[in-house]
Length: 210
Image (cartoon, rainbow, N blue to C red; front, side, top):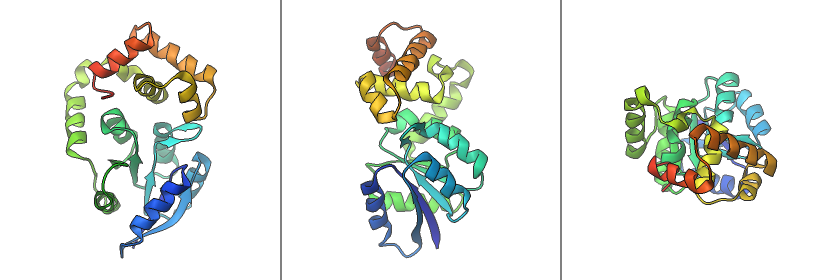
């Protein structure tokens, strides 16, 4: 039996996942978490064989949480289930320690297949993610400017480029408008850009948003 810890700040999402997994004979949800502290506490208890987590947790970057998990629960494999497009976060999530990445728009059968694969000690990536990983390795000698951004700065860049305002981003990440504005200023400086429109053009050019 594969024991699963679900981490998502939306209770309705957790319930939906549990209903999907209820029809399987080898998968069982043994714990849930809706906040980063709950997630870290549950992960370190050692009850679960695999962690199924969303990247959009309140008050913390999912990528930063992955780094914390690698330190505090290094043997717990992590499958990221995210609403964010694969081209935005999959490579970074894998580099931060995730064993797989799947989009929330994927069919239930793919989710079940991904959980079983990661629990068995394998990586789970889609062909699109494999292409992105190959491109990342090929470009490692000439890193793009956005590779210098921190995980939080990268997250804010993608959200701005997707058309969200500073206020929208602050609410989504449970941070202050001032903090998001500071991140925005750092991003503009690091990428040698001036305006949000420049950020959007940059993100489109580099395939960070569609």
